[in-house]
Length: 455
Image (cartoon, rainbow, N blue to C red):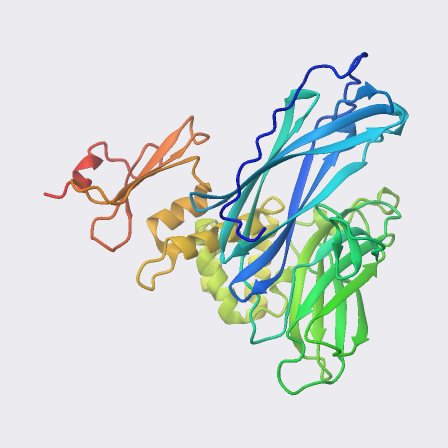
């Protein structure tokens, strides 16, 4: 896909009439769609490659009898946006057939990969799946991810891709890359007696004069940052880039959430670069990880391990819309990185799983899109609203009207039965100030139209 900004919608005229004689075999479970993404180096230093991985439960589809047994198909739609612009729209069928309905097992998925090259930006993917033989049955999900092209002046790693299988490629398939077939494990969920596999790419290995061997360290931390497993493998610098494949044992891990970190170390054991990703283990024979039941711990979350104090302070500033007044006051009285790591770790442990990831994704978007004249976007009114309430359902923009100042109206359908936020650019080239909202607790001014008047 050479130009992802010019991608036509594939219009599929899907017949839902019965194919042949016989009745549709109803699904055994709800229709479920899983989506995640892994980012790799693109063709140049301005573009990155993202692989969007998706899975659809086979038992969630309806099967139609045919001459060879039974067939089903998932009707998949991808809508990719950057800000309010549609970047990509695509729609296709994922067919599947079985000889007998006894082959339809819960837990078995139709898995696919959708690669696309994108320039720098913050993207939102809306993915929808429908049952071809029962189109009223559907599932959808939203995935947000920033695209940052791989830098050319330092050693870096791609995202970690969790896999259910990695094997030499005998013939090219949609899962083939660098002579390997990598079957993604969407969501990074591993069950009992299931081997953990990872695929990572390293870039910039020949930068500088150092040609000595380096170490690949694979480490696993539990939900509160306690180290569980760690192993090193020595590798040679045989080229500018390298494919790194490793495996880890899940049998010794209790049911819970874990973080896997891949790090490259030089001969002095200094970290050259690292990449981290969460995964999940369901291992009923080992019980539940007791750290999940603890509200706090002296061990910092893995994400804060090694984070310098200046970056901890920056995250504190970014987190102000999530923090309570006592939490802010407590942090401001702390000194030293260790104490600050613990407080930030405790802060996010008190929230539902995934809250920090979602919050920081919104901060990244706000900083990239709402900053003005060196002022970070999270500090603006639009940044605060976006971080606090998420992506609006509707944007109404009025940037260049002759008889009024520039203004925007954001609408959230799910807030108190529907709420709006009105932002006005009072000074040309300046920030957009919040002048009115219908949401309780926010600034309200029914006469907000006076702010957009030019006279």
